[in-house]
Image 1 (cartoon, rainbow, N blue to C red):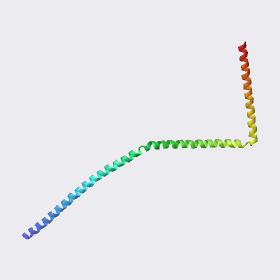
Image 2: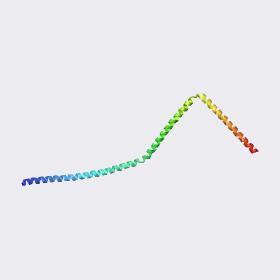
Image 3: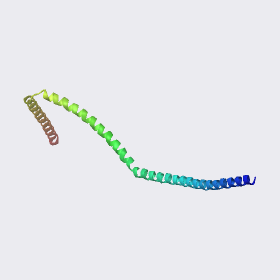
Image 4: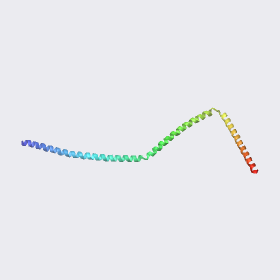
Length: 139
């Protein structure tokens, strides 16, 4: 029986040593988990701060992008106006192309003559009004 007690005592001491060793390892693991959790919180805070700083750096780009969008719309409008103008110019070119140079020159000369005649009539009318005014002043 004493031998059984001795064996039991040895086993108990061995188990106790094992439990103590495991307790030390458990405390070490617990400390590591705390450290990992603290590191994770620190890293999250650090990454959040870095992200916030990057956002602050990019904030001035918003008005630039808005201006870019406005400019892009304006360019689109200009392109549409250019297309319309090109169509009008093509129509004019086709219309002008229907006449040869000599015919156009004759039309220009005819228009110049008509313009001179109109100017002459206006001058005559102005001259008559001036004469009538002079007659009223003398009378």
